[in-house]
Amino acid sequence: MATFVDGPVRVTVPATSANLGPGFDSLGLALSLRDELTAEVIGSGLEVEVTGAGAEDVPRDESHLVVRAMRAAFDLMGAQPPGLRLTCANVIPHARGLGSSSAAIVAGVTLARGLVAGGSLLADDQALFRLAARMEGHPDNVAPAFFGGFTISGCDEDHEFFAVSAAVDPRVQAVAFVPPSSVSTEVARGLLPAEVPHADAAAAAGRSALLVAALAGQPEQLLRATRDYLHQQYRRPAMPDSLDLVDLLRADGVAALVSGAGPTVLAFTDAAGAEALRARCPRGWVGHLLDIETTGARLT
Image (tube, rainbow, N blue to C red):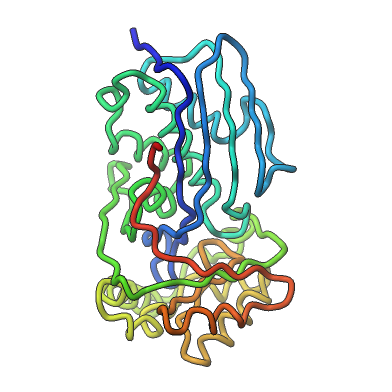
């Protein structure tokens, strides 16, 4: 029978950007905005405290996404605690295309494993990653949130999720332009067609392959490599201001794209151009100058 560790366990988990233009549902990148969460086993009940992003909207009961992820991981390890106390200090904006739900799920499964003595023997990294991906429904944000860095992920024919890490040139930085209004993933996905032209699919495959090389060591190719054919224009009705900003930046040679399901706009840059690019943040939006986060979820 599993036992629990004494005292609280703390985890930090990064924001993520999925798709990165052409890599729909497959490419993801961890970014240097990190939520911080603390959990401990208590005698009974559930206590949830939330501050920061989304604090006014998220539940404080068993339906809280972090709690649900913890319960799933405890089930995987065969160990449900008598009670839980959870504290969340949220930095990642909610419903903005920066992976807040994946961060919550990854934080939850990581906290649960940290609370179980010998948890790594009961659930290794691959088991936790697959559990998190099943909860999220797709792995493109979960993979970089869990492993850090730049990841290529997907699902095999046998419904087994996988993720592979790839290199990122240290010169690459990013600016995230976060608008004041949200767009749900369900709405954004609902705008996508069931089929796309073969030529568009072929072009997207080529740009995705180029993006892997561009991020690894040829950042001068990022503008060409981030050209999307599969999803962004279809989503314009839900986020016209975001797509207008993408068009404006790309017309000026900036590798800009919709982050995940949007409406955040992510633009690649380097140290020399970072501040000038952030200065182009539209009024009422928030501009974040971000590094590529090489570390995923980690216990502290």
